Figure (cartoon, rainbow, N blue to C red):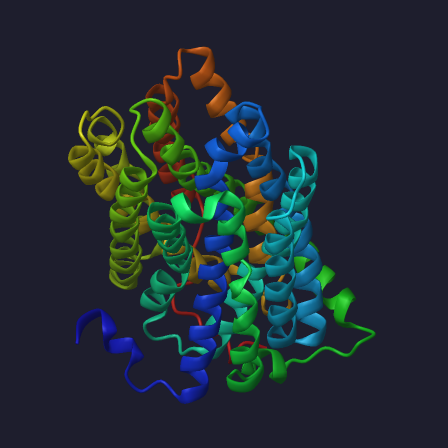
Length: 409
C-alpha cells in the first residue's frame, strides 16, 4: 500500500474535507500561475517591459499577508468551511476581472486584490484539512495537500501550452474564473472542522482569543515568518521567471515552454508526496533540510542546459527537490501552531514570508535584463543561496511531529 496507506480507513467527511482543501489550493495556484505564464504577452500587449509587468507578481505576493490575517480571523470566528467558500469566490471574481483590464495599471490593481483573496486560502484550507484528518500519515497528507500548488501550476502549464495560441492571455484569465464552481462542492459535501467545533469561540471572544494565541506565541511566529521567507524565495525564485527564462534567453515557443513546465511540475508533485511521506520517519526538519540541500547540485542541468530535453530533465529534478521541501510545510506549521490560532498563525506567517520576498521576481528580472537577459545567472544564485540558508534555518527550529490536533485543548 505504501504512501497510499494513510488514505485507507478515512471517513467520507475526512475525504471530502481533504479533497476540498486540495482543490481550493490547486485552483488558487492555477489562477496565480496564469499570470506568470502570460508575463511576456502582457508586456507586449501593453507596450512595456517584462520587469514592469512582473510588478503584478509583487503586488499579489504583497497583499497575501493582509488576506491571510483577515480571512484567518474570520475562520477562527465563523468556521473554516464558510470562509473557504468566500475565499474561493473572491479570487475567482478578481481573476475574471483581470481578463478585462484596459491597461497595465488596472491589471496591477486587480492582481493586488487577487492577492488579498489568495492570501487567505492556504491557511483556512490547511486548517480545515489537517484538523479533520487523523494524525497518522499526516506527512503524506501534507505532501499531497501542498502539491495542490503544483497541480495548479501543472494546469496553468497545460493551458498555456495548448490554449494560449487560441485564447490569448485574456482568455486564459477567463478560464481562471472556473474555481468558483468548487464552492458548490464545499457547500453540499464538506463538514466543518471537528477541532473548530469542539473549541468554537463565542462571537465576543473570537478575535481576542485568536490575537492572544498569536501574541503568546510571538517567538514561534517570528521563526515561522523567517522560515517561510526562505521557503518562498526557494519556490518563487526557482519558478516564477523560469518560463520567461526559457522564452527570452532560449527562444522556446509557448508550446515548448509549457511542455517543459508540465514535466517539472510532475517532478514537483512526486517530490512533495515522497518527501512528505519520508518526513514521517526522518522528521519534518531533517526531511526539509535534505531536500533543500539536494536542490543545489541540480543547478547546472536546470539553468545551463542547451536543449529542451535537457532543460526538462534538469527542471524535473530541481522542482522534485524544491517541492519536496515544500510538501512538509502544511504539517510542520500546523503542528507547531497553537489550537486557538491555527487558521491564522500558519497562514499569516506563510504570507508574511511571501511579502518579505515579494520583490524577488522584479529584482531577478531587473538583474537579468541589466546583464543581457542572463536569467540563468539570476536563477542560479537565488537557488544556490536560498537552498543552503533554508536548510540552516529549519534546523534551528523545533517540531511536534504527529501531535493530535483534535484532542488538543
